[in-house]
Amino acid sequence: MSLNENFPHPVYKDTVLAPLFEGVKANYVGAFRAINRAHLVMLTETAILTRDDAARIAAALVDIDETVDVDALIYTGEVEDYFFLVEAELKKRLGPDLAGMLHTARSRNDMDHTVFKLTLKHHADTLIGKAQALASALIAKAEAERDTLIVAYTHGQPAQPSTFGHYLSAAVEVLLRDIERLQAARANIDHCPMGAAAITTSGFPIDRTRMADLLGFAEPLRNSYGCIASVDYVTGLYSAIKLTFLHLGRLIQDMQFWSAFEVGQLHVPGSLVQISSIMPQKRNPVPIEHLRHLASMTCGRADAVVNTMHNTPFTDMNDSEGEVQVAGYAAFQSGARVLDLLAALISAVSIDGERVAKNSDAACITVTELADTLVRREGLSFRQAHEIAAATARAVIAAGKPLGEGFEAFSAAFRELAGRDSTLDRPAYTEAVSARHFVAVRERFGGPGPEAMNEALRTYRATLTRLSEQQAADLARVEKAEAALAAAFGALLQE
Image (cartoon, rainbow, N blue to C red; front, side, top):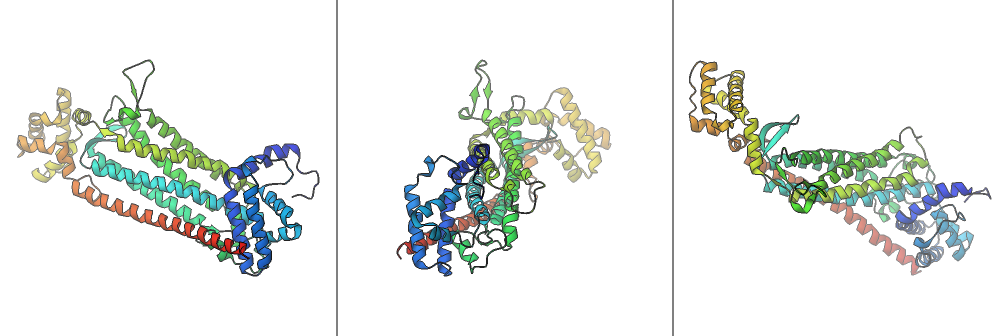
């Protein structure tokens, strides 16, 4: 609608209004329908509209839904946007006076942000559900691989033995925190702007809480200026999305490194490997690469939305609406692909124990426990024990032997640096430098020892259950609201 009879300019129509109209067709028709119906119910219950008028408007809305093929609509510029299209259709059926009553005490401002919030909640719920499914897959894999030895790396170099379960548990903890951030961001969306109207509410006795209830929100957003101007529901959600996929990208990068031929401790099964078109011996675990770039694209798409809000005025503005909202939905699409594919990949991969043992031996990664054992059993300072362990490692590496075969080198280093013979015999030495022993004695809180891991895994399961129950309650409230709105609107049709 415009006071200018020449509106819209053809170029403005083609470059702005038509794409916005297509965005509404693809994303928002259901949300607009719910808002119209809920607003009509609220206007009737507050006696702003008579029940007879409300019944006629309700019947007209149903007729529009049944007779207007939205998917087939092509934007012509005859009306400014989808909102005015519905109003024009109402006027055809009811006349201008009665048709215009539906817009009492509301604005496209509060309607738009409510539409965006309803849509973002839906997308967030889907993404959170997939993130929870990935967390469940990671926990299950960590449980199954609790005792599976791996080489843990620091600074890109072999460092110490750990287990695949312990490594995955670290990723689980981050993902659970990311899910909590996503669900907190979703909770911040769950406040209804309807009733804010343009920006200051209305002189009509509207019931904002009733609108929030009918639309499945937890409650109304209090400050009406903030309903229109505050876009932290956008920046908060997309920031949480970015962090989630930034963090998953680090896990994915490790999988790329671990599956490299030179490392080889992670085996990717054939169903997730592509063979080179020219080199038949070459196994390419390219799903990992797709995961990496999709995670990065998701981060970039989330960043694009957040950065668009930078230095915008604290008021109603198109920078947070229309095309920006639609552009952001691509982050949910690529993010969902990452979550689904990563859950499948994690469940399918395995650890190559022979390569782990080979790399462990070559890098002497259990030597820390040798030093620790000397402190506990020989009464040495850690620095002196460290020097003896280092000398032992240097000797076996020079001889091309694994640390487990270095008892003679150890005995000589101990005698030279401690000035006496060690009380460790060969079996005690062999145990001290065993990767399995290394892990088993690390039963401290958060460590890779079996009991420490059992306690951690129980905690992860409990946390995931709590988060899943919270989301289930949110979804149940939305479903209950949809039923309540359908009943209240249906009652108007019976008038």
